Each structure stands twice: as structure tokens, then as C-alpha cells.
Image (cartoon, rainbow, N blue to C red):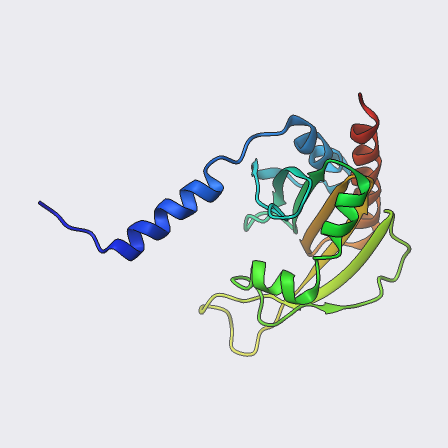
Length: 190
């Protein structure tokens, strides 16, 4: 009979218990699909997600990755967390600090993201933009660097986090506007 070390087994059980019961939320998915045409990138991944799950009032979250394959010119990973009301969303949005973002996504970042002023006005009830160094594969040329951008938005009872590389402002700004518009539409539904 094969024996297993208890610590890895316990970690797997905890991970499945914590993340295994994420449910699909069609409204969250509809919010994230809103900028599909503006981005002009194919949907490569679409799934329930854990963003801000431990925040009070959390109802659901979803993630969609547009592009990102070698044949795609850019990548935008769009995440939304929906909350019971705008106050809960406001409190959850406040958690999206550089330290939180680095802790959550350190597998793809070289350092904590740094706030920066986006060159154009962005939509949303609250908005913040960050830039970070992307961790490159070992096969990347020595000295190569790549910057990624995170845009955090709150639109009513939704908190959005958009991670993008290679998405130009003339695509990103209208895509964010579509996300905010759809989030408010979903919130207004009975």
C-alpha cells in the first residue's frame, strides 16, 4: 500500500475545499465579455475565479483571458468580483493595494506594482493604474524586460481588475468603458 505525506495531502484538500466550490455566475461573465469586440482578441480562457473572495459581501468572481497566445498581438486578463452592494465593493476595492496585488500575482511579477497616472481619463467610480515588471521565461534574452499594466476599477457593486500587456490606449480605454457600462447594467437588473 502506498503512503502519502500528510502535509501535501492536506494542502491539496484545503485548495480543493477553498476553490473547488467556485460557481459560475452568468452576470459576471457577461460583464467580462462586454469588451470582446473593442479588444479584438480571442477568448483563450474563461472561468470562475477567487478575486477578493474573503471580502465581506462577496457574491462571485470571474476571469476571462483575451489573447496571450504567441500568435496574438497582446493579452488582457479581465477579472470581476461582484458584491452585495456598492459599500461592500468599495471596501473590497480598497484592498487592491500594490502589496495585495503582488502577493496575489507574484508568480508573474518581478516586484510590487507601482502606481502611475494613466495618460487618459479612465471610467469607473474609482480607478487606479499600476505598472509592474513581468517575469520572463529563462529562455528570454539576457537583459530583456517587459512591463505589464494593472487597472483596478470599481463600478457600482463590481470590482474589476484588468491585467494587460501590449494593449494600446485606443483599445484599453474603450474596453474599460464597456466593462463599466455592463457592470452598471447588471447591477440595475432586478
